Image (tube, rainbow, N blue to C red; front, side, top):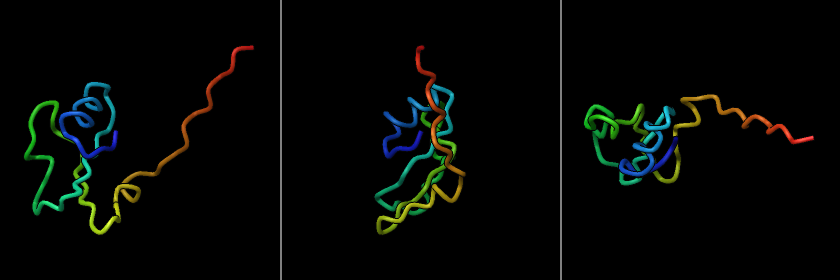
Length: 71
């Protein structure tokens, strides 16, 4: 789960067992995942500078699996 809200995106992703990435659009210096506790702790914090985001370089993004259609 990738998002910019700790309370909404990170908590939801952690509860679902997903990898969580917090996007820091405000560019807070030194914001790290260690500053959060419990289900509010993201796996990664990525600072977004001038609209450039580094998270695609952390993971190889694969397309979602195709859904099986009912025959």
